[in-house]
Length: 460
Ligand SMILES: *Cc1c(COP(=O)(O)O)cnc(C)c1O
Image 1 (cartoon, rainbow, N blue to C red):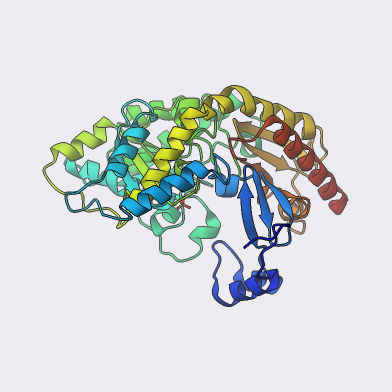
Image 2 (image 1 turned 45 degrees about the vertical axis):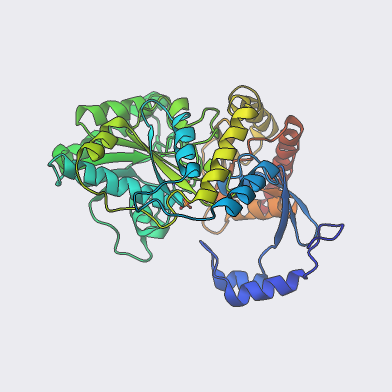
């Protein structure tokens, strides 16, 4: 319960104590957090959150890149309420279906690129990625080439945290724990031009990264490779926008060796980059894509894989079961909420708003606010997602040493000044709700400037 000041009636310390006793947090040093006490979030409305101490916070991350339509949307609450009363659950395993899942499949097919019109449901981005991993390998098996099972991904990619997602991703900190990893996965360099291209132009570097894919394919043998998987724009890796020629060059290599192309759209999907999917914005023509996060604006857990004709028809014509799925694949309540979410996005023209109005406005305002800041080495982003490289020296791109965790220092200043901005190493990332207004973008950019100033003071 909230009182007039948005404070919970249960006191903050009580919740923190219970949390410390019983709750193990994801991607967290639980011991350290237990000593400090977790921040208790109590309410959300639009682009704002409130904590149990009554602080109002601008959520520059849309939760975890997912609350695209903003907090407190009654349309989505009502869709859940109605569906829960009518049919709270039934599975889609036993030759059964239900209206919400069929409707959602059609709704997704109406916005996916090209022939990606066959939808397989899961509950999280990680499960969607595991589905892609199994599906592309099984595709080649159906085609009589079971040896084509190597998956190629990139360093510093994020594809989730199941054993499949962890193995496919390129996060060293994750690979070091809970192994051994899934075999037959290979990785190539990431297209991080600002950080890793040396003296190469963007175009040269785009070509070099595509060449790295071709070299890897030749190294392991073209006839052993199932698919290349990549995020159109890397998200959790720090928001890395590849050179303009990167994806068309990657695509050429995939075609040359008849390798399937999978786009992990878990962040880029649902308007984040100013089109329905990152593949639209970056002109990628994938054979299969994963989606989650923005699919339901985070209101309920749901994910999907959209499969193009090439792969889908192989499964449809192959007279056998695909032995894969989840108890909650196409959960009716989550499906009803996701359908309501997509319909709301269409009704409010939110994708056009991001593409033509608020996205360009945000990118410009942010650059006006902080491009000249002494800590800012580089800003890259599209639509409503951005990554900012913090550096010790703007000219030489020199980074801060290990003794100065610049990202965490900055993140803490943000936290204490009513802004949620995430740190990925020394990169700061933003991904606000798509419904953010011009005035709220102005406020966001002012806060970013203030927090960079405070961070600069802390380290000088
Ligand atoms: C978040 C994310 C995932 C994993 O999604 P979960 O719902 O956390 O399992 C996979 N891929 C990308 C690109 C993501 O950003």
